[in-house]
Length: 323
Image 1 (tube, rainbow, N blue to C red):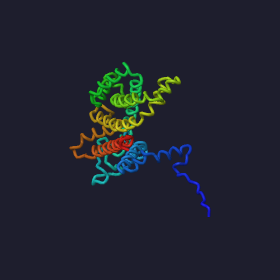
Image 2: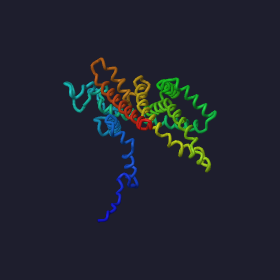
Image 3: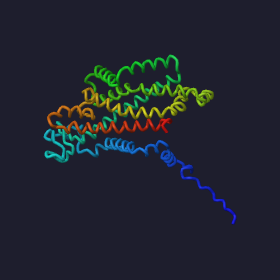
Image 4: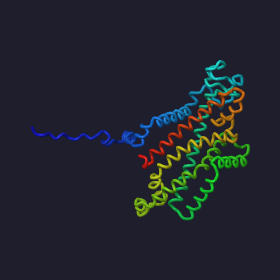
């Protein structure tokens, strides 16, 4: 018998795929997703983080009342203990606060506010820091020196002090004209101005390395303008550190908002975040109504812990020295 040549069958991952299926397949076969699957702690943190976001998005459908609507609140239902206790009443699973708000519903809506302020603050800080970092690293010279000296001065102050300063200036200028939504915007601006330095310094360092590469010289040779080179060619090569900073800063932004609200300079009681709920419940802690402060505190701690665990994993996964 003559030896028959059996044609080689390519592996499924080697077969080129098209469209969205190919993008999903490449993501599932990537080293980052493999690192994610290997860590059970990271997978648990990812599930918890997604669960918090889903609870915040679907809060109107999951809550028994709208805690922001005074018409749905009854003082007769104030300070009811959780459902599993002897004095618990349905449908208040986690009890009620001093205004008759269902604590579970308040937590769901508070998650929406805290995550909204945190995400918008990170987006603003990232946009400002990335822009200034690109300009400082690519242009250099006096522009680089000016931007970095401003960043160095801001680094001497804690982020919470910068946020308090911006918040205080806004309230002194606008006074009683600030409603709930305007206060939310002020908080976002205050948080964004507090965390842009990390993005700027990281992007500047990456740009100073990348701008000496051959592909940047080739782009300059064919006459591409500097903004196109920075955004299309240089910026994508700095996205790894930016994603890590954004993930960690999301937790810091939420903590900053909660701290400001706890101090009474954040969102009003009519639009409570997790920090506002903790501040309100802290007044009744020694009176025996422990559930008013305990459950919002647990929710805030669980959210921050899960996001920080994801940030730590992403930092290690994107570090080529640890692969």
